[in-house]
Image 1 (cartoon, rainbow, N blue to C red):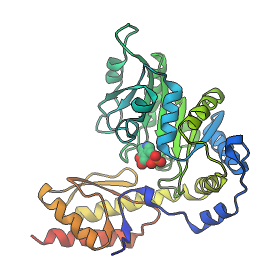
Image 2: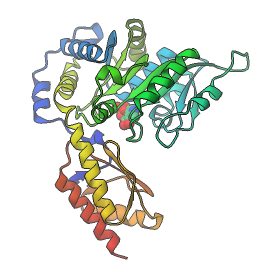
Image 3: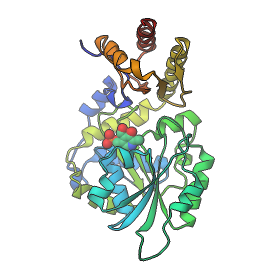
Image 4: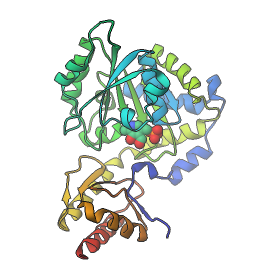
Length: 337
Ligand SMILES: Cc1ncc(COP(=O)(O)O)c(C=O)c1O
């Protein structure tokens, strides 16, 4: 049966009709030569909005993060990172594997932050035994949680004080911006570089922007080429990115409201649900019912990553009725003993 309701991630969103029209009409050129006017327009627009000197367009968030880490850190340097962070846990260890950069994972607190005391303890002294601690990398949102602006202000000042640069994996930064009604520049204050995905809740088929200073982006451009990320007539993708930024950001508020709606429905049928902050709903399920529920939903055309801590993600391709149907299906399953 064809899946009609996909709650696995917001990366499953498909380009809207307007986005496809913008892609079809995009003016293009060879971007490795810097000749693609649409890519140049997207990069200039993002740099200006977020208050950075330059932006660079990548095909994926993994590649953008990796190029950023490799630009901040050299062989034998280390980056400090939350143990739950995407760059550390879900990107094939690229920093270590391809960048010769040692990751220093630090436990995230329940709210997704990393405590300043833990960071202080993890920074290595200047000693022949140790690698050089160079960078602090954070993620916002992280597991659907929004990092408080006051925390970001303190932690980035703290890192800079101790000689660390700061990178933000902002794959879902627009969710935080919409949730807290922040200005884009406010959301990135204190960061030396930011990676910003357009292919999650914003609905673009691919594309991530790396933001930084002129020199930083010049070096990141070299790493992008080394990583095989120099693309040619990629204005077709950049046009989707421009459309996403101009037309799809406000819609994230609806994804957040839908997450609350879904959470409330699941609570009503007796499940333990964490309060969603953005577009991710986490539900605790009894271990012995996990496999049965996964099969039950699958057979009804609902795709979800079911586990003892199930994550359900709302996005622009889901309607309230899809969510109500999901709740009914889950409720029906738990009624059966
Ligand atoms: C927080 C976070 N960072 C980075 C990425 C990597 O993005 P991509 O899948 O485009 O490589 C993801 C992907 O889901 C993500 O969730």
